[in-house]
Image (cartoon, rainbow, N blue to C red; front, side, top):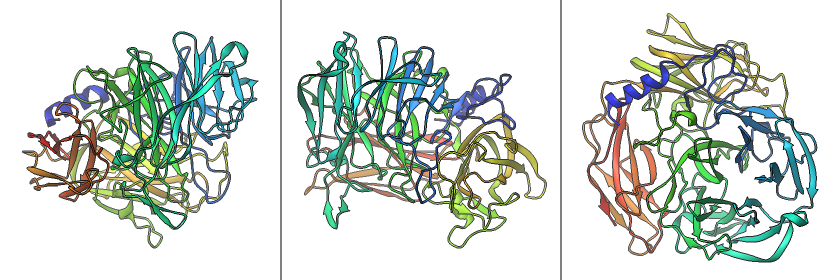
Length: 586
């Protein structure tokens, strides 16, 4: 995207937006009635993620499902102590239900017969005609399967898809709605793990295998089934290789029938995000919004304090002319256009605002050893800065090096030494953001000092672009106990005038001994901050991407052995993105 187009898009989207004062903004709920609807959002979603019930102190949400019921969207996620409701997919309100075993893993939710149905691992079947009111009733016994998915076809027939096993399979089973959704007929196997042919299914942070029980293994966990029907085709999705890895992704098989046979799609994994501020895009749900556009809500990984320390992300999904489904995860944690305003008229869903804070000089009121302020600008959710205390007045400041136009801010907070377990209605994140031209004269930018809900990943649209060199976040109250900690203070806008003059020259070499592997090397481009390596199954289907900074080589281990691939590389900086000019085939 050129600087001109980026400035126009950002200006149009943000000119009418509002800083919501003391009330939560971006993905938060409780928006004042007088505030205009949000026009942008950013991942990870700014939900009030619950603290885990056991030590260590951490937040968790995963295995998400979003369904449209009536005029509202409902979001369910594992171990969240409730579910959320939204009218626009951006502002979410927590509902703590009655009569629902909400602590179970892997929720399965479907709309059927004017009601919402819920199940999960080791949970029974529950029904609600008033999920907004949180009232549910049990209507069936547990299905006793791992990671269930309930799918209601448009002919009234209902299917259960499931699977949760090492190097396992996804299977299906028809259910009988007239007999309490009991099993009907024999179960059927849809497909099995095949990491020998599909490199992306290999376990590990880089798809090179992992150590499990003291033994090195490539085999994945196959899990997280989800069925979507579009244009007469059934898209049966699944997750691999494991929820703790940034390589956690979703693949898809297609069929003309809900029973199969199922064929492996050519653009797998169709949802993946192995790089960037927060990685992972697996165990997900694909759904249509009120305008008929599709979205993918996915599990994103932190997995530092605990393997199941996770967050949620939302990505646009499109079906191309031959029915290939893909999720756009490129720059997937940068500002995106709010779902109600998405157009899909060429290009991506991004606003054009670029990350300004990466690797900039940072300072702080105090720092714990090993948790210095540089960790809050390293574009890695798994690291963070921590002050020595959780007291009011602790601060972190970022120096952009020159005056820049700032359009949006995302404050991602950590949970260092958190003591909270579960939800505490009064444990709200409160802070403020200040801006300065010189590091001495400060003006308020965002005020959350009176916030009345938790804000772990607070994304804020500014009413008008702010011109500043310095931005600091100042603590008012630390949610969850412990110290004041910031994973990253991410500033978005335009700085530096223009995008890189050209995209890089590059070469790609496939491993002759293992076709699942390849190496991409490129020339550095003057003025570029980083590179987006895009690749896929055809020159016009470069749906997969890796976002790289500070490097000129990338090793890939996620290819299918029997498929050709096409590559290009974009260059980007704080002024915009320059698209690749050539495409290479391997």
